[in-house]
Length: 480
Ligand code: HEM
Image 1 (tube, helix red, strand yellow):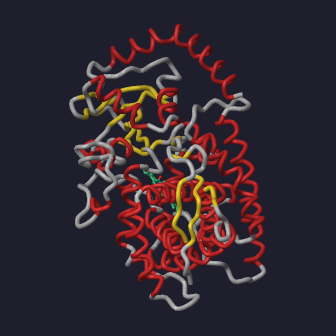
Image 2: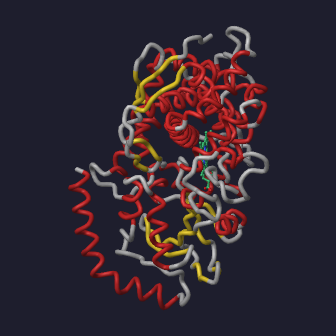
Image 3: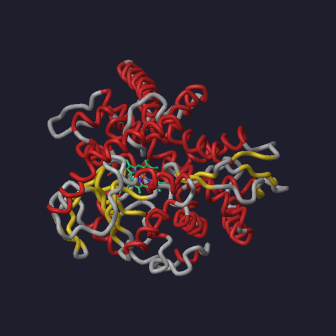
């Protein structure tokens, strides 16, 4: 169906190209004499297929590096996801974008995102994410996060008992997803029943791969499948919200999760959020909070199997912590603070395999950047992946070296897996905790070997090993 859709789409856009290309190009050329170099490709489709395909082939940075080399410029214009876009690369560009939030640029998500989250279109994704931003600090503040560490550890223990222990080999990627999803369901919704949690999991996978796609709602397209999936999840979330309201009315003690925060939160005019908005917020958090972290965990397992000397140092750090615990005692905030080397390793993994490749901004007005005109309404795309692989930012960029994060760490705006400036990922600290809790639990139990030595990596839109990273488990002899 994908192939059928693709051929149809290409024919359709070729037709459009003939009729519109001349008009479109002339318009951009005549209005702005000094646009960045680059090629707008075909109208509507632009260079989207190349952009998405280099990712699917595992090298999203190639789309950017090829053009930087071709135009001899770290800034170039293109058209992706049906939008004229300026792609920027490097620390100076990141700094410019992150420091000009709401001055020259504002956050922008592709049309596909707005259409998949329909309540966002009622007010625009900008307004929605502002509301979200106001609410998140309560739920992600340090006191709350400290309480979540024990929750995460007990979920990790159950996860390893159910999915890893007693097995000779496992597929890491689906298991990492299951872990982060279980954690999110517990922390956001106090949901623990495995059957109930499983009900959500499948549509989430469909949803994730349709979010960054061409917004063509045609049966069988990733976009259309994602819309269906989001409706299924939203229905389930609304049922949970209704049940929670009933429980609260019956005076049951309210669990301290994100849903409780949302039910209590009011806006400036004292209004409570409606159920659909609430469902959409939780859906956004579940998406933001589980696929990203599970991609990071999967690549940590991959790199640790390839680099035994790094694995040994992580093991040493984690066993020190494990030995200091009483039997049955769960991890706490102090333990997390001791996991410095492990976090440096996780950061180096996210440098080489950032879970999110980059994000978009929209120009609020015409402005000039690096001598080039950026027209109002055009989109700008900053790229974590290509910044992380830029030798000016990270010498010997292909070398895995966690010591880059020691001392003051990388220079500002070079290490950007969580973005930067006012829109930096609000879930960064939460992600750090769930990743470290996972690392503790996995190295404490096992060593492992990859079963496919050169497994292909696909980026769609998160990086993932094509076969799910199957590994052979080698349990340690003495585990508490
Ligand atoms: C390793 C894990 C994660 C990575 C690499 C990551 C990365 C990012 C990045 C790059 C952005 C976009 C910033 C921008 O537009 O400039 C972002 C936004 C966001 N992330 Fe994360 N994230 C992770 C985990 C999480 C978690 C666990 C949560 C929730 C608990 C979360 C919630 C969000 C939200 C709500 C936004 C949108 C913020 C806004 O629009 O202002 N993320 N994240």
